[in-house]
Image 1 (tube, rainbow, N blue to C red):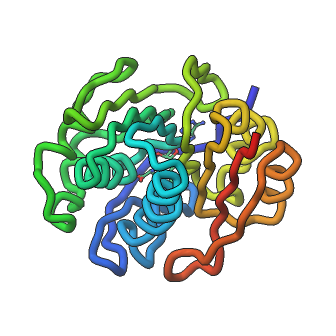
Image 2 (cartoon, rainbow, N blue to C red):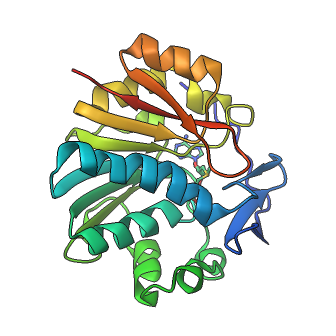
Image 3 (cartoon, rainbow, N blue to C red):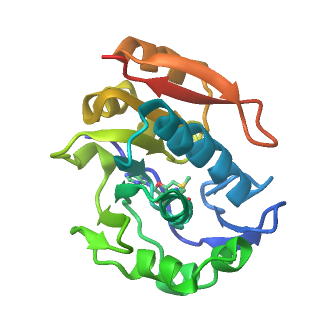
Amino acid sequence: MIELKVKREKITLFITEDGSHSLQVPAMGETYHSSHGAIQESNHVFIKNGLEYWLRQHKKTELRIFEVGFGTGLNALLTLLKAEELDVSTHYQTVELFPLEVQLTNQLNYTEQLHCNPPYFKALHTAEWGEPVAITSNFSLTKINAAFADVATENKVDLIYYDAFAPSKQPEMWVYKLIEKCYAMLNKNGVFVTYSAKGQLKRDLKQAGFSVESLPGPPGKFEMVRATKDC
Ligand SMILES: C[S@@+](CC[C@H](N)C(=O)[O-])C[C@H]1O[C@@H](n2cnc3c(N)ncnc32)[C@H](O)[C@@H]1O
């Protein structure tokens, strides 16, 4: 059983350097995104180096994505917008142990910053938990309210967005057992992306069977990691 150490006494909103909001958890000394830019970071790590990379490699118009840590829903929103732009059918599953209050997510400025259709972001947050919900004809969302360690996924996925709190703040989310779990969840040639580039993470990914690449990180971060399941 993995020990949970996340404390949720108070979560506050702040504006990151690209103008987009993020959240901080003072009790943990942790934020949901980089203070250099929440949208900028999510776009760089998960959309450009994850989704767009996978689509280039596979030349398919349908994929399954699994996200660890739904949080503000920013990765889901950016993925939905890209799925609409590229006309890609996307099955998005996400796990979140501590769903945010709607009063807080209503204040996030992503719709305005991204100049996107307002109902999309609201629909992501109001979607029922535990069942697939069609947000658009291209984007279905399944939100799972559980600890990642306890989630059993029936269908394998093509792409994993690993967006847990930092290894220094929530080390139990970066243990080898969970890295092995990610490997088992992926289809052949499936891809795992994360903003972290810790040496131990790279060693664990290799030990689990992944090919590991260190890529330039978003502004304010030297590196990020992408790992591929070759067989
Ligand atoms: C870095 S933040 C999420 C960022 C999120 N993708 C976003 O764009 O807002 C990490 C998230 O993981 C969630 N979390 C913490 N422990 C978890 C667990 N054991 N299983 C699933 N999610 C967890 C946190 O509540 C938080 O929402």
